[in-house]
Amino acid sequence: MAETDQQSVKKYRANCHCGAFVFEFDAPEIKSGVICNCSICYKKGYFAITPGVELKIVKDEGTIKQYQFGEKKWKHQFCGKCGTGTFGTSEFFEPPMNMGINARCIQDLDIWSLEERHVDSAKLPPPYTPHLYQGPLPTPSAIPNDKGKLYRGSCHCGAITAALKLDHPVDSEEYTGNIYDCNCSHCIRSGPIWIYPTKDQLAVSGRENLTWYEFNDGIVRKGSCRYCGVLVMQEPVPLREGEEVVVEEEMRKFREGFQHLRPFNLRAVNQDELDVEGMRRAGRVKRVSGRDRGPKYVDP
Image 1: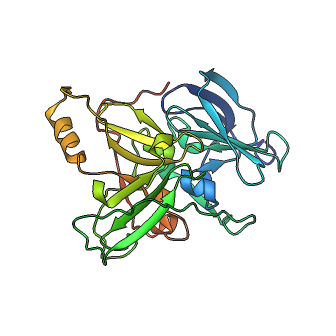
Image 2: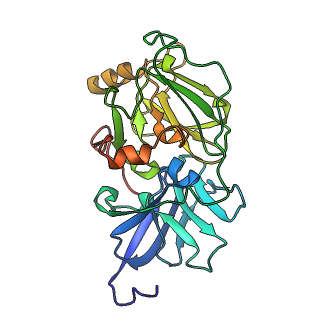
Image 3: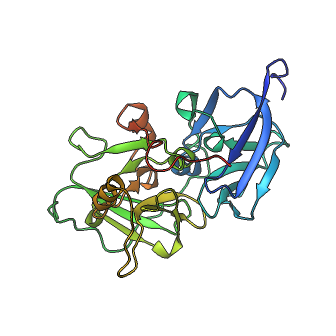
């Protein structure tokens, strides 16, 4: 912790959303973090800190997976159950300065209030090659075949690819749909930027490679790649034939409203087609509070 010895040190506790992995560390008060636009940080919405400290693993139920790519100089850790990115280690530096922690999973830390330091790593070699969707394109009934804007995207490893057709480019003033950055307990850990297309506006290939995660009221489930951990989409929790879910009237209406939608994480759109971070910094993404919907999340 060079350069910070004179600062007051705090104890921080962090966890994946499902609580299967919990860790602690002591570090000077966190006031800022790095937002990097390299391919993996961009798709996973990382808010990284490198405090140069040792971690104390408090709980480990064996759900943590490791993802590497390219020259495999980084080891990215994420929970295979809920998809939360926790930390990564690099071969470029000596321990403990080789560890980057995803500050999003730190308890009682208001990510939205921290200073953002932006790093342009996308231009560094080796280049990332986007994975292109090759299946049948979406044909939304409300958008003529020769109209609209088509986007292609994927998780980071390419096990899941998607095509999204909108009535107008999402970064244009003509697009009037919702674009949200949510601070519910799961979204704040995963960093998605949500858009809400209808079912027929989105086509997804590789659904068998999605890990579905349900929590809270069990109305909506979120799908992330089982191999790289990138959060891709949401959908209503499927009901078995004849099954009914007894929920409050507000939740019932919420579920009904979701039946024709397929919320999609815009970070999955190929970065050369859409600059989501640029949209967010320009104010084109609305911050919404999801903390108050459903039962209160309890930190493990």
